[in-house]
Length: 272
Image 1 (cartoon, one colour):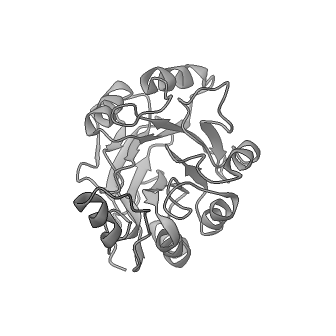
Image 2 (cartoon, rainbow, N blue to C red):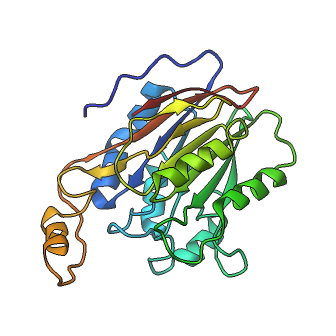
């Protein structure tokens, strides 16, 4: 499995692996086969993964969520397919401490929670929020900028707190705008949803780590994780064709980020 060589871990840093959208069985198989060894080799303290497409390529259910967690993922974030699978609402209500849906969905009608607080064995606290963009996304999504501001204001004790945001969005401009908006206030902002890893992993001027899109944890043998044959049918003709997962070996894609435990600022962000 050809992963990039890990850089040395910064002295005293808290290291986070964040993985892009887990797509179907190939993505889950890649997690099961590689993540635990990868975590040890990278000396990672926390692993976050987007599970938006984990169950059959659209949504998540209790079985796939637990499978992802058992493979070594600590926190699962979601997106526009969060409630596509039967039983997902009830599951999210019961497991919102580690599996969260977009925070800027209407709070009074949406099951689950949009953020969680994870605590490492050494006491390091990591607050994670899941947001969803509005450009080209549709739905009843509220403003992600106002949502992240309200969330930051709700964090009473931010001393020594590491903060991570998964911005699940289509438009690169919207992801970049959110990164600029919270630069210096969040430790790490990562984009998901497009399944194509971008080459702009960096630390913004204020100290926030950023990447437009983490890419996909799934098979590269198709079209963004789906069967090439089905994707071509949808592009070349008017007849609807249900999506099918691309066969082939899954790969993990995302970033490895080192965060300063005192300031909460990112030190480095490297592609995985």
